[in-house]
Length: 366
Image (cartoon, rainbow, N blue to C red; front, side):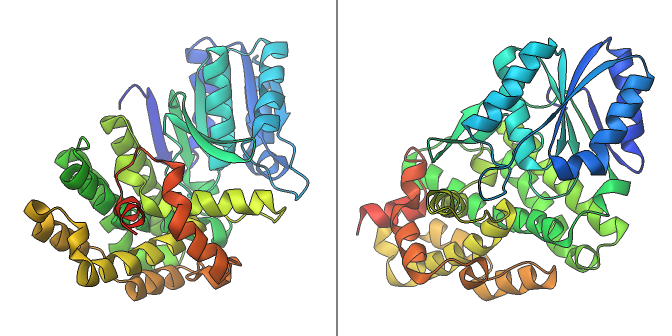
C-alpha cells in the first residue's frame, strides 16, 4: 500500500485505532481536531486510547477571524508546540483535509508518523504526501509525509454534512481536467507521464460518475464508493510521486480563489466545491480552444490533444453532475464575481509555474 501499513474502509473502523496504537507500542499520542470533529470522533478516540493505557493530548485547532480553520502558519505552530511539549510519538488527524494538511506537515517536521481518520469523504488528499499550506497569504504545497494508517469509518462518513459529500464528488470530477492537463504537459512540455497511473485515476473517477445516483442519495454504498475513489486517487499520486494525476488548472483556479478570499477576509468555501466548479470553467475554456485556437497545440501532437479534450465532458454535463449530488455548479453560487473569475483565468497558472497546463500555454500565447 505504498508504505501505508493499514487501510480500513468499513463500518466501525475507528474501533481498530486503539489496538493499532497498542500493537505498535505508541505510548504518547496527539489527536488534532477542530471543535466540530472533536465531537464527531475526537472525543471517542481520546477515551478509547486512554482506556488502553495510552497518554493522550488533544489539540483543537483554533479558527481564524472569519471562523474558518485553515492550514496556515498559526495552525501549524499551534500543533508543533503541542507536539513538542507533549513529546508525542504519533499524531492522529481526526477531520477533514485541512486538519490532515496541518497534521502531516507538523508530524513531518518533528519526525513522527501520523494516522488518518477522515470525518467526511470531502477530498482526495487524506493519503497525500503534499501539504498545501497558506504561507503569508499564498498557497504553497510542501512535501511532507503520507499517513502510516487510514481508518475510514463508514458509520461516520455516511453522516457527514451533505455539502462535504458533494465537495468530495467535486474533487473527483476535477480529475477530468487534471488528467487532460497531465497528458497535455507530457505532449507539449515533455513532463513525465504514466499511463498506468492515469488509468488508475480515471477508473476511480468513473466509479464516482457511474454511481452518482447512489452518491446523490447518500446511500452507504454511494458513500463507500466515493471514499474508496478519493483514497484511490491519493494512491495514484503516491504511486507517481507527484500530484499531476489529480491536480491541474482546475486546482490552480481553486487555490487562486482561496487566496483571494483570505486576502479580502471572506469565509472559505470547501476545496472540492471550488474544484468542481473550476472543472466546469476549465472544460468550457479547453473545448473552446480546441475549436478556435488549435495553433496553441504543437503540430505533431495537435490531433492527439484535440482527441484528449474530447474526452472531457462539456461544462453543462459537469454542472449537471454537480447539481445531481447537491453541490454548487457555478461561480455565482460560490460568490465569485466575473472580475475574479476572469483574473483567475489569466493568473492562476502562476501558482504552479512549473506545471505545463493548457491554461498556462494559453496565457503565455495571449
